[in-house]
Length: 337
Image 1 (cartoon, rainbow, N blue to C red):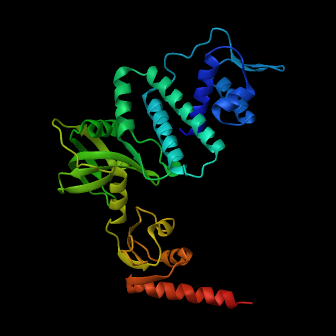
Image 2 (image 1 turned 180 degrees about the vertical axis):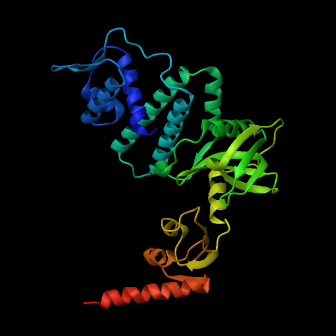
């Protein structure tokens, strides 16, 4: 659940504090325009909450007399989805922050952070203790690799909750996993973290079956069961970075090796982490080394052209042929009258 839900919940909390709140005041507190405040008020009314519109110079919105929020408006799955959405929203804001943010942007960020904190606090306050403890473990185990506009819907709580609890308390966990080719296995993991990346959720872990660090998609896990005992995760571990590295080095049909005359910051917008591994130039050099593992090569010529930096193809030879053919088509198009 993204920003609108957090702000609607905050609007309800503001109105529950009593009195009439003007539309300009609410807009300032929520970090939105006045038209959006009116839309949020209508959404509350659609949920059966008696939001009253007060006309006049000092008019605005208030709650009907005697109304209080019921003890629990969300079931367990809905509460999990809301808190995951708030966490994703916070990650998106952090990813979008830059040193050049204007004061108005910072004020808006503050309003959004207030909305997230108050919404999360109100939800947690009405949850049963056992569920609140589990959701705290989930929030403590999550990581995001990018602004989560592409984040998939919340995973199955029956899978996510035990995995997050195992991450939080360093417990082993047994899973049943179905690989992309349909092969099914039962594995014991020492999970390091749960990561959202490019529309999917992953758990990165030490896999005792293969005796190696592995990454598993949560939607391919059909059962997750905590096991007794504890493990010690590696120091300084970064679950998001491990997922990106795992995806970038996964075996595919083609292994591509390139040298590009540009720093990693110029390369990653076109060949992002999770797709390519970029080694920065050594001191005194300007050429980065890039490796990819891909199933198809046909999309690479256009991507390399879009880089607008000199590059050398080390392998495979098939990619050189595709780039030459792409260049020929471009020249023919440019000469066409």
